[in-house]
Image 1 (cartoon, rainbow over the protein chains, first blue to last red):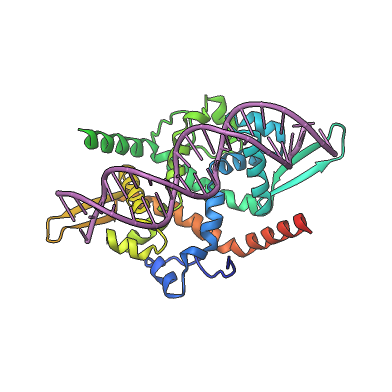
Image 2: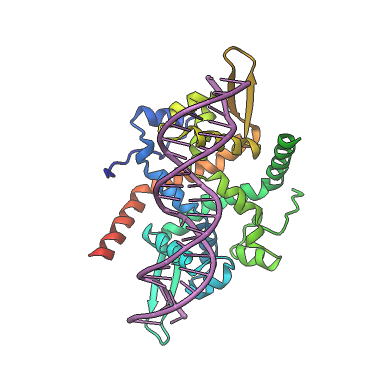
Length: 141
Length: 141
DNA sequence: CGGTATCCGGGAAGATACTG
DNA sequence: CAGTATCTTCCCGGATACCG
């Protein structure tokens, strides 16, 4: 398991981006950005971030707000976001104990490009769905 | 901007976004944006889009450019991108037959917010990795 | 309340072989 | 060259039960 080395997907905005990365030793097996991106865009994380963005939330509040998530997956998603420094977990020593999750500064910063993507998809969802149906139609017809 | 939304993830930029969506009947089981977003950010799609963005590519060129992808997954990813209207598949009646994949206008439009996210992650990957190690360290130590 | 541990089924994805 | 078909394996994720 040799996992050490970065210097992969990152800044730079010319067209031949991937080619440039490859020229400087891009290693798809070992690309930190892919790892992070997979996490950030994982099934539940976007929704969790969206929830917490409004205001800090407690575990069961999130469980209720995200109707089809399981305890297990919520815990896991929360841990992962915390691990990446995007969420701050705060335990209150009350009775019964309370735990609050809030965006960190890093998490808040992430919301900008993330919401931009979400908005783009939202704005074009009809077009995309139309393309889907066209594709599925011609495939079967 | 007569963009009538369909009650799900989409346009709108106030803070309590999720709450607003829920108020107007947001259904997490049936959210088009989540479906699309999952596809768009799936394991290989970003890399595929990055590759064809430079210039149209053929199947085996992509296979070679993405060292650790399997035939099966490449085919599937390509089909999916085509299905969503992001990629244009063109067959050349040459011998031996050639097939070329290129971004559509929609696909090109997607690259802007998508690259913005990728760049953000790239720019903050060190911070995030540091957070990871800190988290893992305190967890085990 | 806020989790963790365990079991288990189904789908995702790799390897391989074959086809037009 | 550009895929498809099949087989198998692996791990994601739901359900459930229990702990601090």
